[in-house]
Length: 565
Image 1 (cartoon, rainbow, N blue to C red):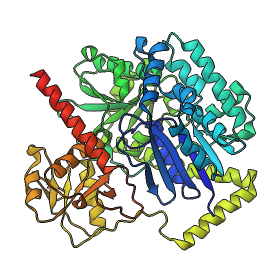
Image 2 (tube, one colour; image 1 turned 180 degrees about the horizontal axis):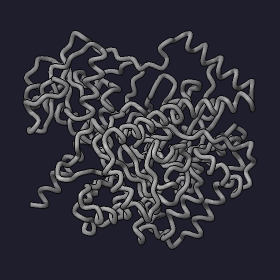
Image 3 (cartoon, rainbow, N blue to C red; image 1 turned 60 degrees about the vertical axis):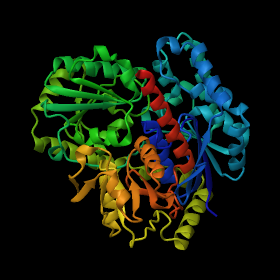
Image 4 (cartoon, one colour; image 1 turned 90 degrees about the horizontal axis):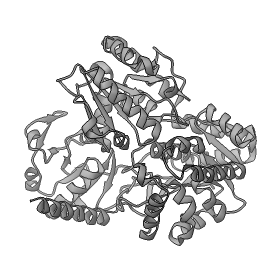
């Protein structure tokens, strides 16, 4: 029998949340699931649209648990009373997870149930450690440290009036977690050294496994479509809000003033660090963007910026820039934990010389840019895959607990013998049916490639954008929705980001299209039938919840428009 792992994370890790933290959680757990049966528990509140159990693959199940209304109210009160609201710090649910989650039966019962049959428990961040300790005293617990949390919060909360008391709480919690866990997984050697110095953690309990990234979206700099024809170059920076990233965003804004020939794009909640009225004309504050929009900027921008000078852990966005072939200008600090070299994999700069570095990069030809991008991509593939992270864990187990390691390996090999396709998601599509793809963007193009691999050629793309009608994507025509409605019993695959997916699903169902004819294609690849499940493909969404959410949002938007008139 395969060994079992229960992993708990205090925030939503599903695909509505596409930040670096959620990528890291999903990435490692997916790679571990080759060797273990894993249940990953996470908590969500803003988008209650998911199935209660989501099978990412045959061996990885996500239990997505909605937060009760009373807990959300308590979190908001915490935010106000501790002074976060006064200094406009983005809502941080970390300490509320430690303080309040254990009081809610609906949050704890799944942990009690799953922990009883698990061999290893993993707390992503220290904030769910006490939940696991309470649910399964005596079980083996690993702490997966995305950074040194005390150091991270010390910077993030520097303007909060309750900073000192809150930091003491984080220190006590993280020390308790480090003392109580059997193994601490770090993502940089620097973090491991800091844990040893700060909490006196024995080095034998510390294992640096680094981090990974998906490498399937690489585009050479010389083959990119320009983001803007009005500017010579375009630069991109994306981050969630933290004080260190807010400082970096302000540096980008200052740089934009000095280099008016370059268009700068900043995405993510870090945009809150800059007032729209203060942004120069060549700086676009995108705010929170969809996965599809993020991919657009990653594959079309000329270069990325990472002007970070403080923080903890690793800048996962650096690996993402590399994986997409986006040449990157970064500080030395921004490279922490990544074995990249200046001039080979990226361009390094110091903060006082950023303007000169950017101007020098703009003079670099396509060939030189392509070389840097290729080198960075190869570095990511060789050293920063999630499988490489898991190999480091397995190597540690082989030395520290040989019997357990052999049981893990033998059970995995036996399982592979029984099912040679254990890691392959099944795509049981009826090739005799006609198919349309709703969404002519990036995800639609990926969906077209996926169907081609299955020897299926869609009749066409459907899109609500009238400016696209009559044009082609991958030699397939783009039609208005009316063209699909005229088709006789054809299937349609929605290939779009989650926000558009909700609206399109409501549009189709309200037009009388049976659910059995509708498929959702997350990332343009993983298919989910609204009528029946396809193999082990992830049924991310509860269709009825999606429809309810979409119709509610449509009513609210309509009410807002009427009020505006």
